[in-house]
Image (cartoon, rainbow over all chains, first blue to last red; front, side, top):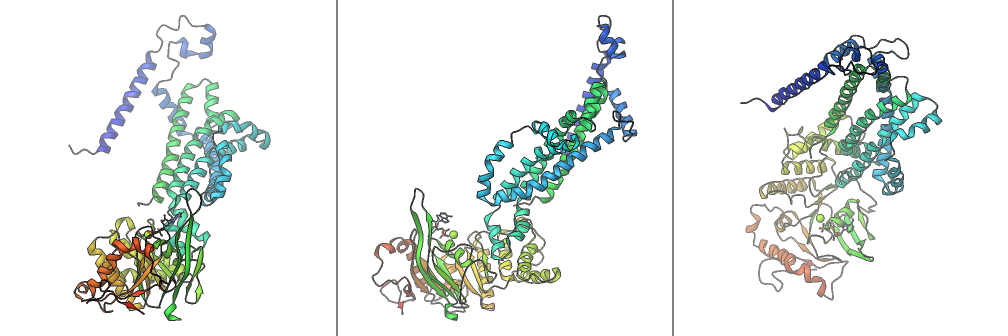
Length: 281
Length: 294
Ligand SMILES: Nc1ncnc2c1ncn2[C@@H]1O[C@H](COP(=O)(O)OP(=O)(O)O)[C@@H](O)[C@H]1O
Ligand SMILES: [Mg+2]
């Protein structure tokens, strides 16, 4: 009876997945039995064999697995602007997310420090933050496109603007909540303000700052898909939209899976960093 | 100069009161200490003891008056004045050694890392924590944490140790050993010590003089009690000393009754600059065995 909770949970996960795949398979197999007869010929032409042969328009798990395997075998092929490997598209998205995100870190963490340390700055900047924070990052897109005049840089800007707020607010909160006595320890040791910021406030606030960074990377990954659907050209978001236009639902499902897995990896990376800086109190 | 190594000269501290006006925590406080002396301050919670200590540390500034240490007015924290805070105040992300080394590196900014570690280890050893130097504060017991705090304060080899109820959170047994430790180290090194405590026995064991502070707001120094016990007193033996209960009763009487009522009937000859010095000894004497000195 000493089967560990983890093992049992894993077994259950596998079972749930198997059940899901089975139901999916059955549901897409039979599809619309005699539906082919009374179908709009126009639509039939559009959808090809999926409709005319009575096959469900929804791809089954086998189709998806096959496509994924195809992508995995050759992730980086490049056959012109509308046909690039999934790996290349993913790399474009990641590059945009990481650039915008790292720029946001560079701005949000020092600014959050300032806000957290200075009640004056905190009060003075609060109204701006309150107004800017609830703006959907995509609402900035036209303005970004108009001023920057480069779709790829605009997407980076949108990532920047959406990841800056959670980090800014968490850093400010973490910094302002640092225990007074820790700061006083450094003060009685005549440790100067700059050194104090790095040796006391930063490590003390690091877990809270990392919480903000983790929220931000999640939001950035959500937003990049939408942003790339808008600006087009490259990236996993564009890939989804392009495959929808090609009516390749299989590829859309593959892309959705890839987006999910990548998002999980990003989150796990930040979670690991967060654990590394968390201290027991 | 040495008999006025620390000189508190007419300090006051005020805070804006809720609903306008100001609350004066204390005002016109005068007290001086000689080099190598150990003084305890007792008084009820909220009377301003921590505030006095923070002013001595340079973490807080008085609204009036000044504190002169070694001939110079305090204008901020200094490595010459180490503080052991109420609660251990260790940095939880550093090990015991890391906490002490942080202080050593702050004191000796030009030392190489190995020398800093060596020095820190010496003080970890001095407080009996050898073998636990790589543990984080969360892995240490309350007494061990407080030892690290003591090692950290001692490691910068300060001229003055300021202690804010350092042992109040510990069990009696641990408190006793740490009191021995602190007394031994202070006597060995000729350290000047200033400690806040609620524990009357602790004050009698450690202090040469005990400052009695009345209740706040507008707290004042009621008197200064000279410890009649011999300098080589032992913690476990001192209650056999004939004068022990005279001091103890005097202190407890103050805490129980006079700390509240003192301000209502301040004696006409009470001089805030020179609070009365009392040396309670055994034997018949009008005020609970207390004899006024000077
Ligand atoms: N920042 C502050 N603002 C207002 N009042 C304060 C502040 N700090 C301390 N006080 C008041 O000063 C008094 C003395 O506090 P403290 O020195 O901590 O007392 P003690 O250490 O003797 O218990 C208390 O009544 C407290 O309410
Ligand atoms: Mg206090």
